Length: 94
Image 1: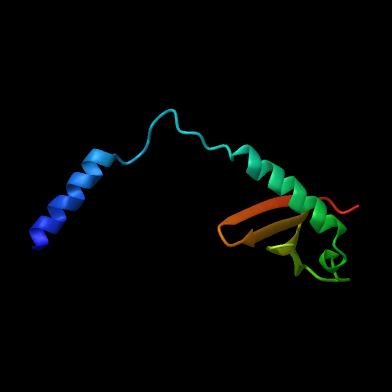
Image 2: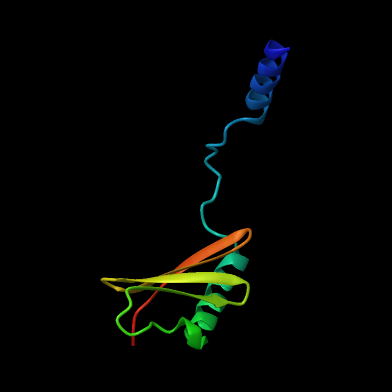
């Protein structure tokens, strides 16, 4: 039984391939780019997302996303996630 299972897995891998095709793309779909811009805009407007005085890390909620921000040498690095999707962006304090 174990041999049959191993052979079935090996056959599935051989038939399905392991990726590596040269026509694969790494750019996110257009809707993900739009979501990032929308979430960033909402994050900047949300009063609970403002950096607390003296904080180097903080978090807040933006719609269905839970976001966390950290101070970096170039401003703030923000990561937001909701079930099934995550995104990130950088904000220069102004």
